[in-house]
Image (cartoon, rainbow, N blue to C red; front, side):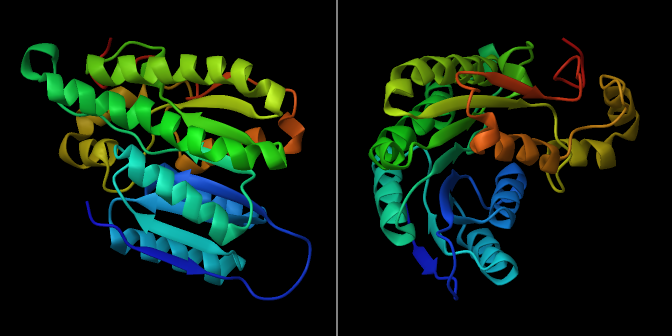
Length: 268
């Protein structure tokens, strides 16, 4: 694993800004989340695998919203690297008010074509990674009576292959509910969001739209409104869950899927 880090400071004076850590924060949904939260007055620590997108995201957050930004490239499957990232992020930002575990993904294909290693990697990425990040963040969240949001998926509660991804995302939903009970006495809320299929440039559904328009149009019919979810829609719900307006929401799983039916373009 290679790792690099940059911290950039906002200028000026004023009320103390809240601070959030976002894993997988340089692309896709994670990028939408960091933009939304920086716009709401958060300083941001983000991590991702690729240095280029991280640097671009960090520069935007600093220049557009005046945020203090701490960015590191790392593999979210590496628990040691995550622990060190959270420690350095807390030092750089001065506090931690929130954690958003946004990194995720699947490894391997169907049951007969997947390996034990691919199942294990999918578990580490979607379940072990938020556990490691939250474990490291808890001492800081206790001081701020902060909160965490784990990003699951519509596949975590509506069945769709590959099974290793669906099972890991289902585990993430239960993880949030269980940790909410465990960490509640410390004043820490833990919730989960389950995004539906999001249309993100360069990602799977955008490629399907280009490569197989007929299949994409058929998939749009899985949504009552006839269109896929935008990352910004999910980011708005995450921002709400991190806010004081959601102080009584704890241990919940919030679907943000537009009423989506099947999570797959090829039915259940």
